[in-house]
Length: 415
Image (cartoon, rainbow, N blue to C red; front, side):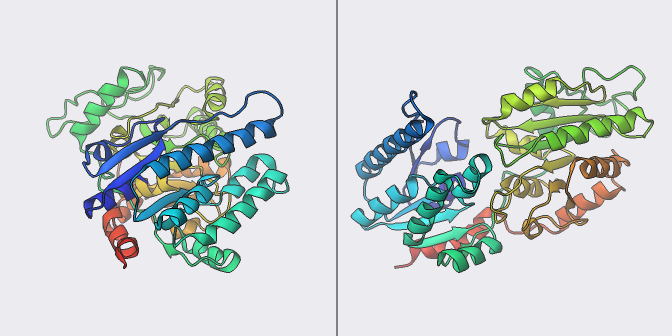
């Protein structure tokens, strides 16, 4: 949604950006004069009594809050929202659009009811109500965007909604990171995360960033001769991503090294915050790993693309609850020419091309074997990992701006 706001602003629109301020927006959004931020508060609902009472009161308060915020604003030509989350924002945004003559646009990234079903089950009354709600209010939008052709077909067939496919594309900030910026980032991270250190190489040809891991044993290779590989994943720590798959794979990878395999040690960085983060941090703390270090930092918006552009391999554990959306994190990784190992689901092939820009796996054992295969030639560039990176460099697709101008600008400028 920050990308949407910036694109609208660049084309001369005055944008009112409504949302939770639990994390700081990107500096580009904060600096843009045409974008006004209107924060809304996180609502908890009644904290006593049955859970259904908490949920109902939370929704009611959110409805009133959103109505107040949207009706206080100047009349907007368009109201654009992302779904999910759509309860209660779809109904409120549609109502305000109808009252004020605004055009209502939904950007479908998934279906909210399928996410609810992960924790409650398909037949739970709340899930069935949420499904009815999205099916009723979704078709009332003036325009619809969606993130895959598979979702476009499903919206047309099962919802009666004609949507425009707007594939997520990386912004220009996602690119391979120069060594100097890598060095500066790791110096900052080292203050709070000892897994990161950055040293100047004695190699006279160039400055080289070196990752240092606290618990590497003395008999491992010299850090100046060879560095651990940087493995990166990002998450909102929700139920549609099972990080135990990655942790089991890392344990198997540790076993490969102890068994004599010639593999680099790993620094595995998992960025993000969310409801299951503390649960997985406890699992991570319980692991006994000598050659793999795992850290879970929260990064500022400006630092995330720099870290992504410094990594050697990305891992995606996003399991689409609907089987119809694509992980934005992989889009950003590809923008940085970062090869990816991604867990399989129905329409992933629209983004990840197996054996071309990454690998698709089904379980922790297959992921461990892929890590072993991809990193066997590390840090050289002659192996499969280097091939995937070269393929990404030569097959750069559209960036966000061109994609948005082609697919969304005509919708918001049409008479």
